[in-house]
Every structure is written in C-alpha cells, then in structure tokens.
Image (tube, rainbow, N blue to C red; front, side, top):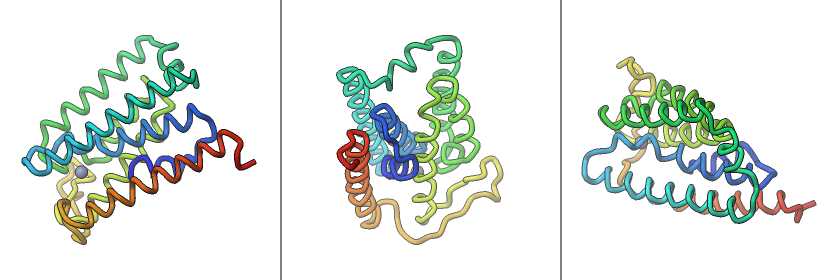
Amino acid sequence: MGIATSLAVLQPSTAAGCLAAVAGGAVGGIICDVDARSSEYARDARQGQAVAAAIVAAAIAIDLAGGYGFCTRIVERMDFDVVLGVAGIAATGYLGSRKPHRTFAHSLLALGLYCIAISLAAPTLVAPFALGFASHIVLDLLNKQPVQVLFPLKSGAFCLGICRADGTANRMLAVLGTIAAAGLLAWRIAVTAGWLA
Ligand SMILES: [Zn+2]
C-alpha cells in the first residue's frame, strides 16, 4: 500500500523517479512497525520488512544495471550530510523500536524526524517515504488498537475500530495493495518509456 500510494500521488515519469517512489514507498510503508514485538504482529512486521528490504535491493540492482541515476545522486554527494542523515534515520528507528507498539514509531513526530534525516541523506526519497508512512498510519487507524499519532500527547491516540490487524481485511488490503502497486508501476513504466505517447 505504501508503494501504491507513493506511485499514485507522485506519478513519476523518469526511471529514477519510479525507483525512488517504489523504494521510498516500501520503506515508509513498513518502518512504523519496528515497534511490533508481540509474537504474531512481530512475525508479520518482520515479513514486511524483509519484503521491503528485497524491494530496495532490487531497485538498487536495477539502477546499477541500467544507470538511471537513482543511486548515483546519493553516492555522488556522499558527505557529512549523508552520514548525519543515515545516523538520524537509524536513531529514530532505534527509538521507535524501544517504545510501545503504535506510539512514537507511528507518530507525526517520528515522520518529521525521519523526513529531516532523509532530506540530508537522500532528498529524492523524502516524498515517497512520507507517503508510504502516511498510508501505514491511515490503514492502522482503521483497526481496533489506538494509534498515538500525536505522540507524546496521550490525547492524540485514537482509532476507527473497523477491523483487526490480523484479520481478513488485512489480507485483502495486502492483496489489493500489491495489485494496485503492480498496476501503477506498469503504468508509470509505460509513461516513462513513452509507450503511451
Ligand atoms: Zn503499524
């Protein structure tokens, strides 16, 4: 769903833009669940993180093979900002993993900190990451465990109570998200390649 949201909103029309939308949307869409520790949620979260890592690795491999400029822009300006940005992403992720589920790691505060850090390390990934992150928060708000979006404010915790995170709705969303992401990516590749012109 993170990738689908990123592609739908950003509508990239270059290969580097498509790779950034996919990689940023994948990571943003799953990074909130670094705080999932109860066995069942943690298993789902680890699976999601493994899929996101594989997608990022594939995006890097495709970029290196095709020379589209998605990675080189980051590597070219490998300086103190990049080191600071990577450290900021790691620190925010670590802090998120130490806090209870659906609190700091699922908050606008964490989103803001990640975006500042990513803007230092890889500015092109800020928008796709933020869209992936936002899609995760919106979907989590549908279910029955409150999300503390306005962490550290306790009053900011709420949910719509429509479905359970481990139920049929979750599996349906995963299938729909995968189909939407694949369809949107095919569309953006066709636009990028000029097949629809
Ligand atoms: Zn979550």
